[in-house]
Length: 225
Length: 242
Image (cartoon, rainbow over all chains, first blue to last red; front, side, top):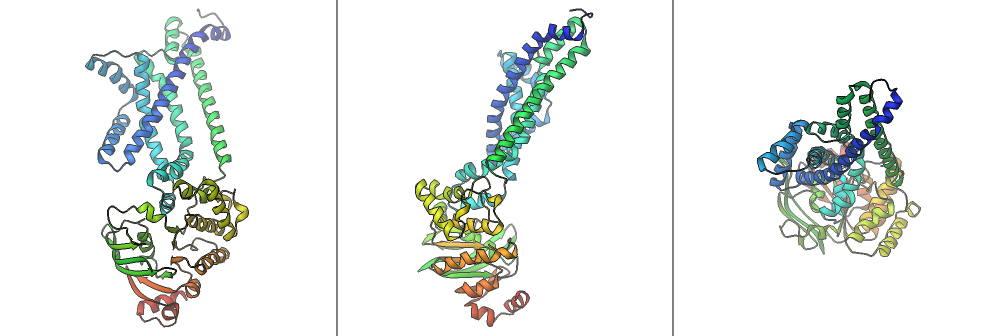
């Protein structure tokens, strides 16, 4: 790899290494988002629960995640907690944990806002028919809330995908990390970062397109609301 | 036979006393219309009858079930009290048929087939048999409210509560909803109706109740209340609205 190759040759030269990084980026994103959805739903249920202890747990969790930067969380979990407890976890595992806790907190708030956005009369109508609270939630409130929150959830997915790049600081060999490795060897930062930016851009564009299709399908299926 | 008995019902929202001690008995098949200025507590009173509002003090007995005691299975009681709301509150993600079938099927009152049959016959009663697969958003206000009535009736309740059912409707659609309610009254349904439609109250009600300031101020037959109101506040109110 020397500075004399032209741009396209250079792309072909470094692409295999970047694709390896991108594959890890995608894996991290998928794993952490699946887990984050679960964390988000549980945390949201804690938040809207009538049990004070559960409210308190989710409130603490949310305020810690929101009140600290992702990079600090990454260092704290990968270096801090592991050394305090004297355990070893892989960088990939640590990265997924960090991202899932982080995205989970924001998703929790998105879900809560979605549930609150459903008209109060919907719950009243359901309950007035004799449906228990849990059934009303499952069959009336949540289906409407999900449709409301899809754009915000997709937005959070995109943010999390971008946040994976921050995990390069703890040595996670994702797309950004591989790029930095390449630049450390050949100092071609302009082309390399441009290519990396384009790769992220393509990923996010695909994600956005898919979500638009889902949104449109939901809208067509169920009539206007 | 008494369907609803209310004794000394009080309801506070925080420090605000909305109901200050209401006593009322409603007999089977009776149509009771609640009238009064806004803020008088009519809607709150109605919502206490199926405990959509928690009751601060007093007793509400519906069909021999005291709904103010702790162990009361309120869901079971609600199955027997239909409610129709000012804003219709149809479920927007379900079509007309699904809106009506949901509760009877979920509460195991009917099989899917029975519920579907029931829904179709109810839609025929309210004049909307051709709208089964429409979604609420594609219906007019009057049509939505008629579907909402059908949805409440699908649970085969003995008692129907109406909370200003025509107040959110365009004037030309009020008639079609009142028509359905008249039919229901003629069929012997026990009905408690909060309304601003004095014409409806005059024509259909067995008893008219005037509420103001959290109390029942006056009650009697439509003739008594409308033609010869005894209380000054009732007179003032009727002078304004009639």
